[in-house]
Image (cartoon, rainbow, N blue to C red; front, side, top):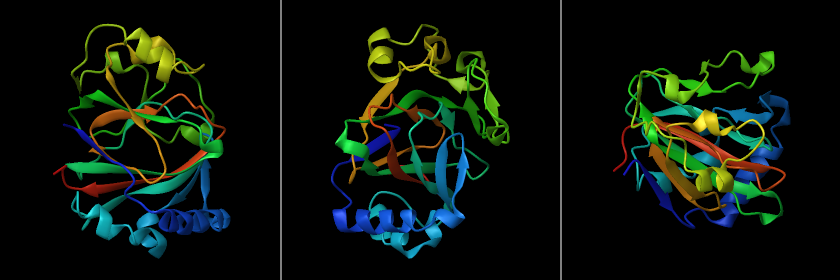
Length: 217
């Protein structure tokens, strides 16, 4: 399995401390593509307190990213991969406005090279996002394994991905799993796998994404 979900792993006290860190960090956060981010999170004590929990599931000795984020705009399908592979992504939901049900999508398909990228389809973006590596459509790539050569399942798309800039054609050839994005849960997956925000059911959400050298146990 290329992902694992652990429910109710992070207690509310720890979540509140990390949220306080985030809310007090306005002067050092950056915004890209409508995502407000506190970078290098592993350097903060409030987040390092997660290490005893995480090391039960992954090797935490070599952190290589990423951020604490808040956003209201679903983030495009992408991979966070580099020459540090093998590596794993850790996603920890912290807050969902009005406690709405929210999903996080991990696809079955994965890249076979170490080039990070974000797939935008026909969507055009402002310059603050242009520094990120990106492509057009995943089905046009030559280094994605597991493409189905069929349209994405229509029921899956309608339920989890049907938003203005996520057209069905963007997900042609893809299949995946909609994981519950719930504060206190821990989501871990292989960094080579394509993933994205599910359709936003809430006004905004806050979470942590971390990346470590190593593999799923």
